[in-house]
Image 1: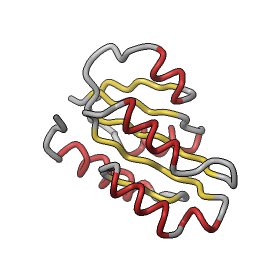
Image 2: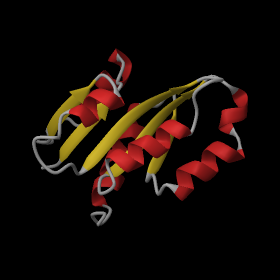
Image 3: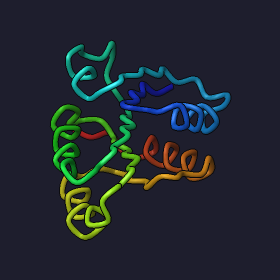
Image 4: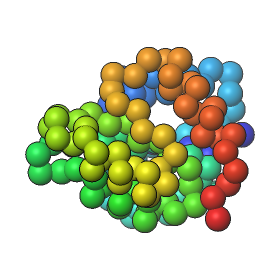
Length: 128
């Protein structure tokens, strides 16, 4: 059983995660924003954070830095909606690698890809 925090999920992502975790007993917590997620400490140690990033021309990889700072020991999966083509480039991918974000999925995401990503992320050794 894993403790999973889901940040900024729209109805599609919530449904996708629900479909990807059938029959698995995990403790899911939801937060509308990163600010709300960090304002109240999680009820227990987090194993996985799934954060939806909607990036436009005035928001980009900086939010990834905030997510890693807020949850230094959690495995992180980012689902990204990149509305500015430049963000899909080298800078965005470099920041993902430098912050040791385990997985970054660009939306739209298929159920199988989400299931595989969650299972792979939870199989990784704990961060310390």
